[in-house]
Figure 1 (cartoon, rainbow, N blue to C red):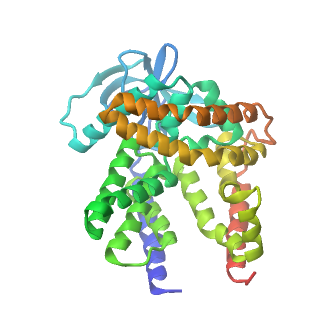
Figure 2 (tube, rainbow, N blue to C red):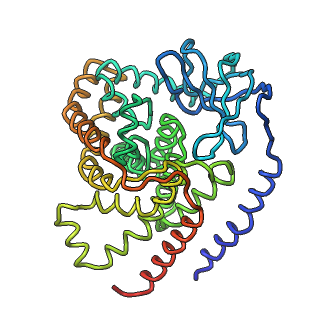
Figure 3 (tube, rainbow, N blue to C red):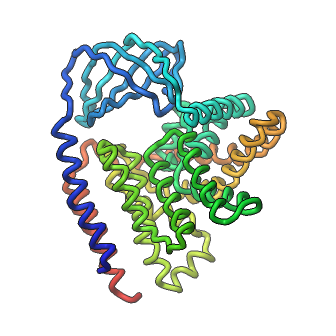
Length: 414
């Protein structure tokens, strides 16, 4: 084992547990029907329903607070609000407790906004307006989710995405960062020196992360992307596994609550699976050749690996899993790349020349129609696995086998 690996293990094994201990020792505790007054900044768009909207707030505790309020005035990403109301505790069927505040007093706090955040929010709102004016629902929400991770999907379509197992594509993630990084670095390389072009690319990645809403998956992917380009600037070889663990370490150190965030768990474990399980397929030349030439292809292989790595998380949080999700992913994943390109180009052009941007966006209609039909068909299928209560012992045993498989395969020549 190299000195670098030993150093990283010692840091994680000592610093992170201490951070968790002191953080949770100082947790605030709330009770049912308690009056509360606090300020919060929205880092995601509110969910809009027929006659009300639901905001999500985090007070630095394990529990997220949901605020149900009137439909108007509408609140948006990056708004800072002062909220006063009475908390209500509700226990769900899966024994999970949620905290809700119904129709509290809400006041928008006027603050000197960060220029970068204000610019990102302005662009975000213009892009949302451009897409919603051009495409009907759920097409506009679908492509906004695919390109920018902006999720405001109709309830029925959102449910179909969950059942069919393709909800993960309606979120900004590593694929988006890879495309943004590759595209930006290529463009900047025409006008700037290599080192400056790489620095500019890092700034674009940071701006895109803010524009996308700073979801855990995009933060993790952004940190890894920044590490990749930083290593190129320094002339060092990029080590993806170090980047993943460093990203996880940084995120958990500054926000220990992410350990309970489903998005963070899915993103981290899926990436971990791809890093350590994908080479097992690649190590066997015959298997790799079959994958590349068969109808299965790279996309479905990636999907199977990612779902294998995240199965306990999916079952424990959603209670259901459909084997048809593998087929659904195989049918729609090929359309993600062209949709991202069309959506990204139309957004950039539309901010300057709206009519041209809208014309470009029309090119996405056939792909979106196809995507929606696949989701509708597979959204009606019955789940193979349905659990009312997920045993944590299964998750521990599952990931013990997961680690054992990786260790076994990495030490045996296939």
